[in-house]
Amino acid sequence: MIKKHEIYKTDKWNMMTVEVQGRYIILREISDQWGEETHTFLSRPAMMQWVHNRFNKESYKDNEEEYNNIIAAFKQV
Image 1 (cartoon, one colour):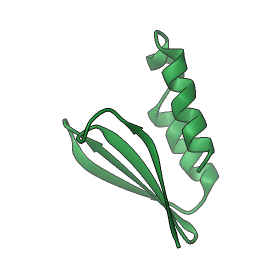
Image 2 (spheres, rainbow, N blue to C red; image 1 turned 30 degrees about the horizontal axis):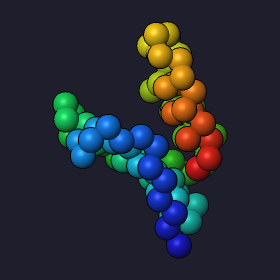
Image 3 (cartoon, rainbow, N blue to C red; image 1 turned 90 degrees about the vertical axis):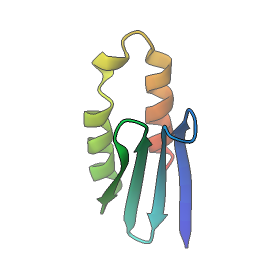
Image 4 (cartoon, rainbow, N blue to C red; image 1 turned 180 degrees about the vertical axis):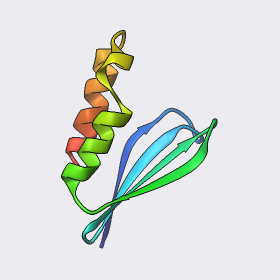
């Protein structure tokens, strides 16, 4: 069974989805600048470590609410 979570979506080119496929967590990041990147994790702690490196708090100083929403969405996976 595959569970799909949509983390954020600004339009059809800037979005991030997470699929839980058994013991694998597959994260797809689609952007208009870089295309599609896929990351595969074996555990939620490994995914959360990547999330905290990718979305560091300093880059969201002006918009802390967006940062909190993104982190909360990942914690629900």
